[in-house]
Amino acid sequence: MPNPKAVMLGGQMDPLAGFSQAVGNLKRLLAEVPGTALLRADLAAFGALAHGAVFTAFGATSSVRHIVPPGQAAKRSTGGPNSPSVLLPELMDFFLGETLAKRFAAGLAPVCRCAACDGLVLDTFIDNHWQVPVAAHNAAVLMEWLRTMDAVEPAGRPAWWQQRCRRAVDRYPVLNAELDHPGFSAFRVPAQLLQWAQTPVASQTASAARPVAGVERGEV
Image (cartoon, rainbow, N blue to C red; front, side, top):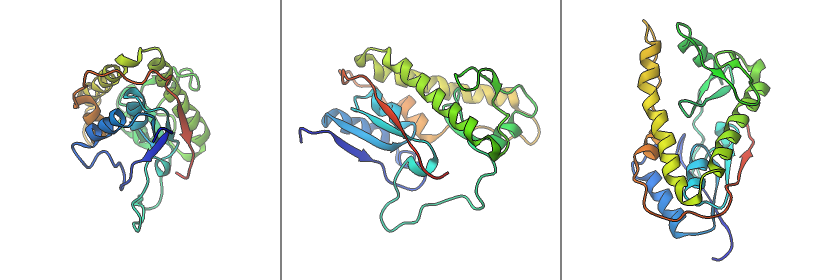
């Protein structure tokens, strides 16, 4: 098909986390089917752009970061969150605001210099009154990533993305050691992030198109 194509990843929770070859297979699809876009995505939106996707859409909330297989009900946490989901840039993952407040209780929380926060400490968002500022923070960080990728030559984007993911993976044990205290619940490296960091980068020429990412909105 010469026209643009769009794919959406299906599964409960993170579709790319449950299969060890999932990221590699997504990269293969993008390489073999030019003009493919990825919709309703999470971290994969940037990985796909780096590997030649014509455009992607990053879900603003977890409900629009994947699709659920037909006939299945989406798995949800009981009771609903009491605080918004905050993107922690150095770990490249989302955490509830109340979770960040607890984990940084005995240490120094990161100060965010994104366009929305301008020096706000990231353990601030402890309840749902912070929904709008957190949405602005998340979008600002994602746009920073997109601008950084745009400055990289297309052929160098796969390696750039892998290096960025590797730095985040390496940061987990360091941060856990810094914050360790009785009762501390350690940060765990997401399976998908680990795949992006470890899956070999093939010698290829990625799409020369300027990376374009949008945000899909939905319920929390």
